[in-house]
Image (tube, rainbow, N blue to C red):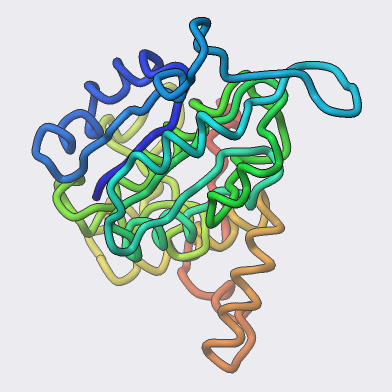
Length: 259
């Protein structure tokens, strides 16, 4: 997988691209990241990439010429997607990350700054992507999030591929509660079911916890999962709510233990 990042601040990526799983994945050549500065494609001595808005308005817009020149300087690899990071785009979620990780060989990611881009830049892109309904100081932050989310899905990045399948959002639900030693800490005890050694009942309990936790904390996500479950199974998803034994009791680690 090749990432071409169009950014006015290439130094922003120095530390993240050399740290953690992302740094290891790049070192193992699972993915490569190419940083391209639009200022290198300007024609004036001040290397200016922005200008005032036609019709008036606050702030400066990024001009189309350096962005077009930067993108057009790149090699075109089969299965390529050109992404503009903007608050006006579709929300980044796990489903989109999976699509990007599996359907493409090259992702060109354009980072926004200032008051945004000249509208004609949209003729370059195939999709617009946002982290959510809020505004950040620069497009490099969401771009890094997208890169991280995609790279960790590429084969060889995560040690145990099976762990990716059990994470939050992979099955449409939040993750279940997890515990390690000690079995009792400041009055909080690990649920007995997890100490039982009965793997079938543990699996049922975990599934139950996922459903209940999602319904409580993310009702929007729960309703989507419930609809998908009913469509796929042809029966009411609420039936799962009755299985799993101890799963009927939602574990809430934020509550103080009884004394």
